[in-house]
Structure formats: structure tokens, C-alpha cells
Length: 276
Image (cartoon, rainbow, N blue to C red; front, side, top):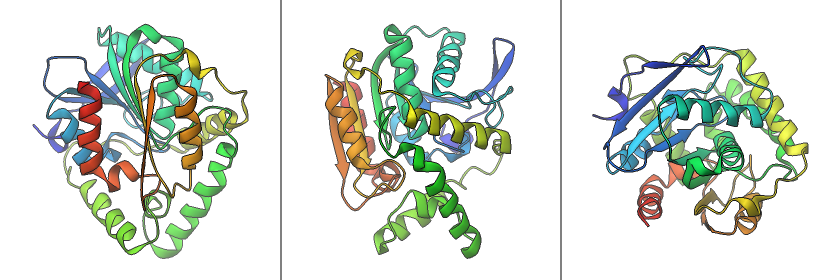
């Protein structure tokens, strides 16, 4: 089974239905995907999900208030982390690997800080630490990108995730085409409330005191592009330096969506990391 064909069941988490999809091998530690700002299940790159699922059980879900899940999006990443932990526990999982992209990477850090025994390894992509300078400016960057997208009748992610180079524009086109491969049982679009709550949570995280990341002792793979408009690669490097057992990969000529632009390299390196 491929990502485009995976069914979308729900599971009750504290009385709230959480929508999720899973596929891949049943053996070993599952890899839980945590998605980005304003994203639903259909916004995961099928090449990344299918690539990881070729060797692992993969579970992706809509957190509270997102897409097909019920409830309202929390206004803090701490609460988003608690919801992620509750979802994982509801699936009767005692240990997981986490792959968090952008906002999902911030939520993954909260899971590791709040429930360290639950996490074996983490991949943090296109993300930075709480309290990182400039992270609270993401709202302005996103608004500008959506204005450009509206004026050009295009998808804002073409501006947010990829550099405006020949290669970057081609990668954006290919990525957006892959997102349309699923034609049935599509997820619900993210609501206005969810967008606003996520942006509020991101801004609050950017203005917060930094977390003590030295207590995250699990192996961590930090990856970003060198032209990330949303989370500068310097923030990713700072985060990696503060996590004792982290290694850093910066993809050249890539943006916030470097793991999608360089999906072949990323999947290979992610699998090597998870298998180590």
C-alpha cells in the first residue's frame, strides 16, 4: 500500500476523535510524523512517507483541531505536545521515533521534553529551538507568501518552501504535483481557527525563554535547507549544537522544504539514521 491509498480512521483521545493514517512494516519502533504549519495529512510528500514506510511502520495524524481531527487547536506548542503524547498512548505505543517538520519539529521537541521515555530517536526538519530569535516573524513571512500566491494564482508553499531559482521552481512544481496523487478520501482543509491558533503558538514560542535542550539525550538528526525563509538554518544549527547527541545536515540550494526538494537524499539519510 502507498500513502495515496492509506485509509483514514479515527481514534478517540480524551473524547476527541483524532484522524490518522498508517502504513509500512509492522515490526520495529514506529515512526510518527508531525506535520507543519497549516498542514493536514494530505500535505505530507508521498515520496518521503513511502520511502520511510518501505522499512518502518509509519503513523501520521492530524493533531487536535486540525483537518479531520476534532476539537480546537491549542494556543501553545506545549499543549500540542501533550496532545501528541496522548494520541501516541491511545495507540498503545510505548516507544516511537519522531519525524517533525517545521511546527511539527517544535512539537516533537515538546514530546521529548515532556515524556522522554516515549522517544527513541528524532528527526527535526526545517525547525529550530523555542526562544530562537526571529522565529516569531514567521507570521509576516507567511502573510507575504500568501499575498504573492494570491497575486500569481499559485500555492504559497512555492514561495515558502523552495528557493526562487530554476531548480527550486522545478522542485516546487514536482512537490505540489505529488500532493495531488491522492484523489480519494482526501483530508478536510485546515480551518481559520486552526491557522490563527498555530500562528499564535509559533509566535509565543519564538518569544519564550529557551528550553534546556541538553536534557534531550536521544539521537537526533537535524536537517534544513540553506535558504530557509521561515526558520533560518542558523537556528537549526544552534539547536543541533545544544542537543548532546545530534547531528546536522544542511542541504545546499534548498529552502524550508529541503527534505521535499532533496527527498531522495533525505529518505536515504533518514533511514540510515533510524537504523543506526
